[in-house]
Amino acid sequence: MKKRLQGLIAVLLIGVISVGGIAGAKEMSENVEVFYNNIKIFIDGAEIVPKDAVGNTVEPFIMNGTTYLPVRAIANAFDKDVEWDGATASVYIGKKDETKPDNYLHKIQYNNYQEGDNNNDFSIINGTITDFNKNIYTNGLLLYTHWSNAVKDDEDKAQIIIDYPLNSQYDKLKGKIVLPKEFDITTWGEKNNCGTSMTNVWFYGDEELLYKATGVTSSMPFNVDIDVRGVNQLTIKFTTGSYSYIALTDLALYK
Image (cartoon, rainbow, N blue to C red):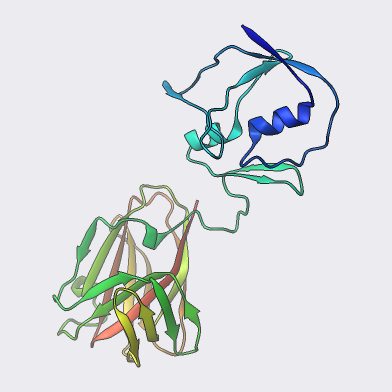
């Protein structure tokens, strides 16, 4: 077993829990002995090689009979973010702020898309959407339906259907449904005066109706707050009585 004498315990410990080489703990002048013995880390039978924020290998060590492991490596193994707050000398694993989303719906790859009429389409919002109240949105989905003979308030004749795999990972889906007055996104370019046709949106979880927004108009956005606990597949159905654009914005997922 190799033995290395280390001074300044704070420097040593910050090196182990570092999320980017940030120092900030109280200085201590105590000298301690630490032992390195090529300690290996296994999680669910699979070995992980601990690394720091820039990719350098960080070796676990033993001090006073306790084994110390690098926080970042362990957090990464469980797919958790790590953040060091120097002002409060705190390490955050996972979300630092519980109010922040765990994911956004538009960042999940859909596993089914039914466009109905071949003129229908949808796109991720890479740019800006402006509603009739001059509110601006920068993320989510923009959908377009060409006029058809579908009954606008019948979800069984929806003009666009999109399925997203949630795999029971989330508890809440929150966001807004708005009719855009204009938009400027990279995939579709710029368009003004998009129209004010009334539209309807249904959200299903594993084929069970979770939420419906019927009669969405230009005068106001619909606030969406949907319980998606235990949902494996989320289905969104959209229909209108005429050609229309509709934006599903800031659709944030929370665990």
